[in-house]
Length: 443
Image (tube, rainbow, N blue to C red; front, top):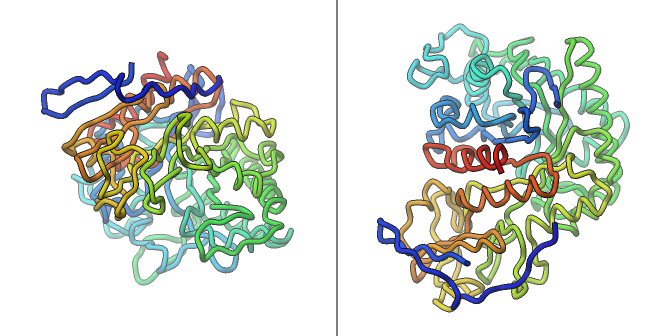
């Protein structure tokens, strides 16, 4: 499918007044352990960040009550740490209380029963175990790394010995569930979390390329990343033979063609089941001009030199020889925003004073919050972009119409499915997940 780049000029927009008084402007049979993809063959993947219970009041139970759990094929728990020794680890610094020590009351529990002080597994992992019991077809994975915990991936991948140590430690901790005992709490110990996870997801941001300024980066990362995934695949297969099942291995990849070329060998796809491509964060508070952070296609008059888009990200990997069915497109449940934005083009491609105040961070907020903002709303169905503008603040994000458009793109290009980061940022009824699921199912 080729990107359509004609821009129809804002003078041709058709305005619809919503009841709330807001202005809407529109342009004219893979089996893996406990779960498998549905009969339509498309993955619906959602991320559950470990910190959302304490910082955002979103629990594993909410994945159920919102309706999201019944519409996902895989849930990834984020994040697991890669320690300074290059191994998977938990410690007092990685919030074991949230992971497996916190005791939840009956009202906060998936199964409606309160945790007891002497149980070996509590916290988020305990609730994920309950979620799996309720949804036995759901694959539950753990995502390692992310923006803040990719610092030592390069060290883990550096030698054959370090790769073996990394792979074995990750399987031991997350697949076999051999948790540490931390402090005086009774939670943890050998096998305490056994059976919770069906998959490991590697989110190294980014091999041989710029990521968090603290990251260890080497030119050899590109080759070593492939070897690291190969070693982890071997360790998962060995654990699978012992357990009489198969574990998934997936990876999260950059949408930036420059970073993809620097750090990714096509060979990685012989070791992983599929990869998710982050189709967002093209622009943000670091940008001096407003622009869409998750557009499906880049308009012809996009002023950014990179002209990043979800379609460009996917085509980057297809050009490497990757099969479409090995790629899942990521969509955001959050937006990026700026303040001090002038009215030309309804705020699009305008200079800014700085990031807009956001509930997550300066210039960052959830779809849940952004869907309730006042202002003029604009949908571009030609390029797959959406924004809201109140005369000062300009926010770009995906709404259900954009998610549905991306789901149709997945179907038309033969991709494996969609991923959403992250579940707590969706609205209380999981509107983005519902749009993802229904459109993948019916087109």
